[in-house]
Image 1 (cartoon, one colour):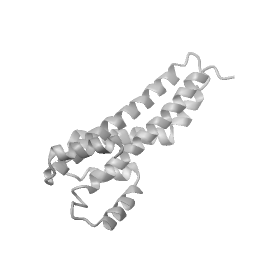
Image 2: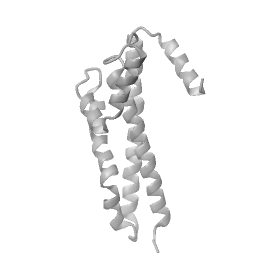
Image 3: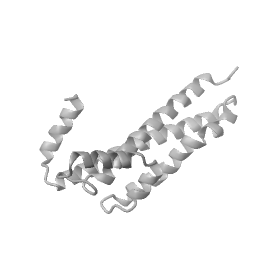
Image 4: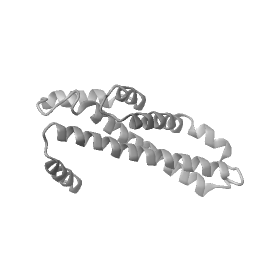
Length: 161
């Protein structure tokens, strides 16, 4: 019988949430690579869809490497993304094997530490996603779209219309 079933359950939940948040960030990174760089307002829809599909198949590491070469991305965001990439790789590839030996430990200090680490990955992915959305908004505004128009479209999108 496990000594820490609630903590193990919380870990599993947070792993899933953090991975999903990282996947959402990956999609935003695709937008960062494409909007205002590879595609513009005049790009044909078929070409845009093809390019999005191609870049959507890249890994977080591949996307992060390409972000390094974009001049309008602040250095601090590039550094945070690089750190998150390392943490996400740990989460996806090593967290289970690192955590498993401590599943039945008492006291569960190590498990609690891992839980906090995973929550930080989730929080950082969300924070970076918001920061990259701001970069996209700035690009859109620089392309001639008025800020009020952009905000109106964002509110409409959020409401589902």
